[in-house]
Image 1: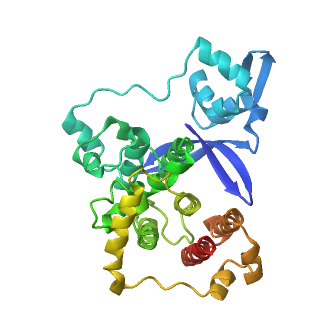
Image 2 (image 1 turned 30 degrees about the horizontal axis):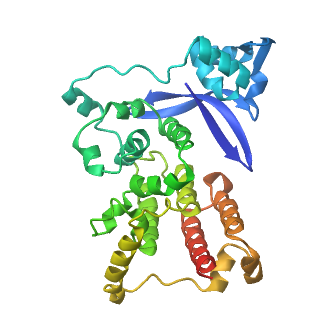
Image 3 (image 1 turned 180 degrees about the vertical axis):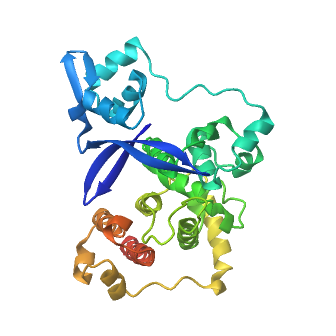
Length: 338
């Protein structure tokens, strides 16, 4: 079982879900609807005690699930009163996840054969802070077992929860390595200094990879015939364009000068043509006068609202989302360069 969130029309609904095997594919199903406020299912008979409303247990039992107290606590943990959480931590420290069994190397490799490389890159960064993708592909890791026997929905909720602890300056770096953007740069510095790489080339590579993953049936099975960018990819588009790289490294001036000289040698290759200001504003549905008044934060907020309209539940389309993102990137560049 796991806690799931689904946002529509600006309102977030919570559910208890589980992953189940249907033939050869792991799918998900709703076990109980918690509504917009899961705290209403938690009762406090005493100052430091609580229990979950029996209605939830009845709903789970109707679906053939007999949850333990520990499983229910894991689901409702984010919504418990902080004072109660503190008492639980002191008297019975929580252990996240199950103990990992020692599995022989060959057996572990066989188990993890079907895990998507995009998932491996994300887990590799989030668990180890590692950016050397050669180590990721050279051997299986027990950390990858967290993605076994889970539906795509459960995997994405797991990653979304893990990503909340990323500080702002690491989010762009995380996306850079998760989407393997260093592959488009020939410089040996691409793996250490993503902030020194050409931003236009990086943005183009990112959008190309978003499009490729969107059409990857092994990553998002069952999406045939559906319109709009998958919500998981929407999350990364926002993360990529709304965050900056970490503060400049002490060697930044040297690296910037080095890369600048090499870029000048490649001028003949040309740059991606920028949309005219009038057209870019029209795509984001703002006037040129309004664009001039918007701050960087307000522009990003407006883009985020429009991006959510491209969600499949809102009737958006894949092509509309990509065009919206390119227009936002062009307007952002105009705003930054003045």
